[in-house]
Structures are given as C-alpha cells and as structure tokens.
Length: 256
Length: 296
View 1 (cartoon, each protein chain N blue to C red):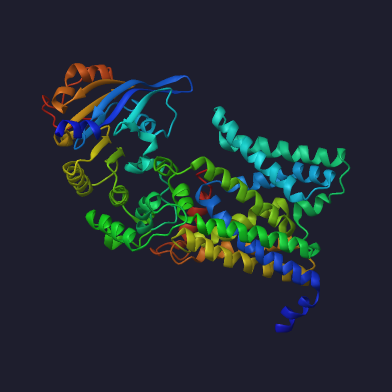
View 2: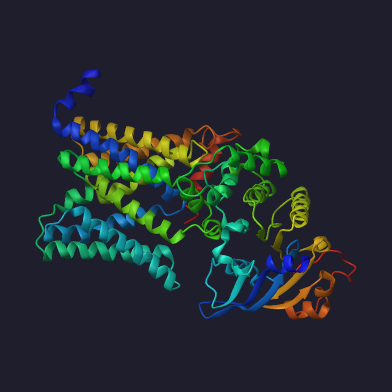
C-alpha cells in the first residue's frame, strides 16, 4: 500500500534538457523524488541549478524532457508548487508591505475576480507567525534585513499550501537565525510528506539535514546521500579541480 | 481670489480643458505606477511616438483615430518585445530604434497621404481645443482601464512584483503583458489631446513618482498619484490661461515641481528631511554627484 502511495505522489524528471541560444544549459537530467524528501542541489556557479528549477516549472523553454508529478505533467498543476526565486530577481524597492507579499500566495486559490476574505487572511497570518514576521507585517519589504526578506518569501511559500517546494539559493545573504528557522521549516514540511528541492552553492554543515543531494554541472554528476555524493572523484568531475570532500576534510565548511 | 478661479469657467473651452485635464490627471498616474515599478517608464514615451503612423493612416482612411493609433502603438510595443526575445539586443536599444523609426514613418506618411494633421498639437497637446466628443472618449477609456485594474489588481500586483513567481504560479503572463501594452497605448491616446505625445510621459511618470516617495504600497501610490495628477492638471490649465503659456508644458512643469518638493521634503525619503539628520547639506552635495539613474 505504501509503495503505491509513494509512486503516485512522486516527482519525476526525465531527460530534461535546456539550450540557451545554442549553448547547452542542461544535459538530459533525470531523477525521481518521493514525498517526504528534502533534496539539495549543489554545483559550481553556472552549473544550471537555477536553470533546472526554472525549466522544471516551464519558466524557460526546455528542448526536451518530461517533468511529471502524480503521473501528470507538472506544468498543468502549478498551483501545487511553491517556487521561491533567487533574491536578485526581486526588486526590493517595490512599494509593497510584508503582509501583501505573503497574500500573493493566495492569488491562484482565490481565483480571478475575488478578493481575499477571512480564510486567506488567517492563512497569511499563520504563515507570518511561523517565521516570526507577524509584528513586521506593515513594513515595506525594502526596510527589512536580508534574512527577514527571505523569511517573508518563506512565509509566502507556506501560505500557498503547496505539495512541492522549490527554493533557489535561499541561504544567500541570510543570518544564522533565519538559516536555522528555514531548516526547521523544511524539516516540518518534509514530515508532512511534502517534496522539497533546494539549491545552494554552499551547503556547509547543512549537508547533514538533507535526505539526498544532486551534484550538478550541466549534467547530473551524482545523485544520492550527501556522503555518497561528496566524494573527491565526484567533486573533481563537477568542479574540474581536485578537491577534498567535506566529510573527510579537516576544514568543516565547503566552498566552491 | 475665488473670482480668479471661477471667472475662466465661464468659457466652455476652459471647462472642457479642466475636465479632460482631471481625467488624464487621474488616469495617467494609475497606469504610470505600473510602468515605474517595472522599470519600464520609457516604454510610455516609446508607445507615444509609435502612434503617429496609425494616426496618419486613420485620417487618410477616414476612420476613428482611436483605431489606427491603438493598432500602431501596440505594434510598436510588440516589435520591441519580439526583437528582445529573438536576439542579444537589449531593451533600451530596441526601444530607441523602434520609436524613432515609427515616428519617422509617421512624419513621412503625413506628407505622402497629405493629412491635415496639425503636427504641433499632436506633439504638444491642444487642451484648449478639446471638444465634448474628446471628453466622452477619454472618460470611457478611463473608466474601462480603471475598472480593469481594479478587477485584476491582485494578479497585476503579483506580475509586476515577481514575474517569475507569477509564471511559476501559472498566471497567464503573456496575456497580462499584452494587456499592459493595450492599457498603456489607450492611456496615451486618451491623454494625447491634453499634453501631446512628447509630454505624456511626464504625466504618466511624474505624479506617480511623487507619490512613490511618500507611501509604501502600490495602491496608495496610485491613489495619491491620481490626486497629484489631477491637481497638477488644474493648476497647469489656470497658469496657462492667466499667463498665456502653452497648456501642456504648463501642466508638466507643475507636476515636476511637485515631484521636486516631495524629493526634497518627503518625511521618509526626502533628501533634506529623511531620518538621520546629520549633515544634510553634505548629503545634498553627495547626492547631486550621485544623482544619476543607476537602474534601467
């Protein structure tokens, strides 16, 4: 019974490939993720981490491949996906308050022509409370610190009540407190059977929190437990230079 | 004093001028707010120039100028989007090339088709020559656009704030983009009579930008911008009446003056008044050195 359940709610990426004006961005990537998994993506700059997340959602055109969730194409059920873009994609001077950023999450569920009611407000409030940002709900987003801004976007993802969460470099420019809170929320979502796919160029000690790691550089170099992936051979293939794996190194953090 | 304000209203042309001034003064900042937050302010200017060929053709064919101007403005906007998506050409260069070409085509067409278009009033507006028909046209366009923005506000907010996020959520971003182009073009056509195509950009951007410095939410920016825009129009028309100045430029200069006041004295963001008051003179000097737009 459990096996059937897992297979039905699986995220499956098959042979996903992207070309960007003649340059190969992604080379036929395939993997599957079961519900309740926290999966990290790692790779050098320009390895295609963001490209892969975007191509999965159809934000950029793929030249080939299939992405399905629950056996249907993912792009037909985007309301079940919460996507948090990279910080650099957002204009932080936009005139909008914390509350209204999180309320955006309800846009699809409310549907056209309808304005947020009581239920939507409760959901937004709960999401802001979870990331400890409710007291700042009236602030303009530009007045917040980097960590606080990232927490607002985490709240927006939560308020969407999605089944699948894609985070693009969520740890960039955030403080330790926010980092810890994000990992906590990730663990909670995982325990509720959600699928999480998180990219970061620098996982450091957070590698231990992951169920699985995908090592990417245009193609999928390794896929498995962090211990299995972060071997010197794999890293050499991904980064091109001999590197020590973080699990054997004396220096605890890992940069690329 | 009161007499100074009431006396011009005895003339029908002044009543019409003020009516259309208020309408465009409200409509332009609402639409312009979207241009500002998307860093597309210059697109307003571009579309304004792009309507000229359509204007000339519709004069020649004897159809309503609304149709020709709309088609031609939209075409210009779409060509820019197309060039941008199909090559490495950046948006500013694509804009510069497209709008100058359209404008040149328009001027040539006016000569070739022997239109009786008064290029001067097209460029700089002719608010004192406004007819009742013009007012109704502007009123209908304004009501349509304002209703559409009200209805689709939450989708538009998401789209303009986080385009990738909006697409990831499955919002029809291409349709929204096309809708925007249509709205901008219609707004420009509705405002052409008041300030002309060269200066319409000022009404689109000026009052909304003034409001941007004073509030922290998009819908507040639109509401306050509309109030500022209407006030600028009214003051501009009176100044033009009493000092015998061209009305379009008068409106624009009032609007820009209001911006300058907000820029210097906004409680939160004013150059002279924002919190952290030490050394405001040095700050002004520093800002004069840095007062260059850094983002496009």
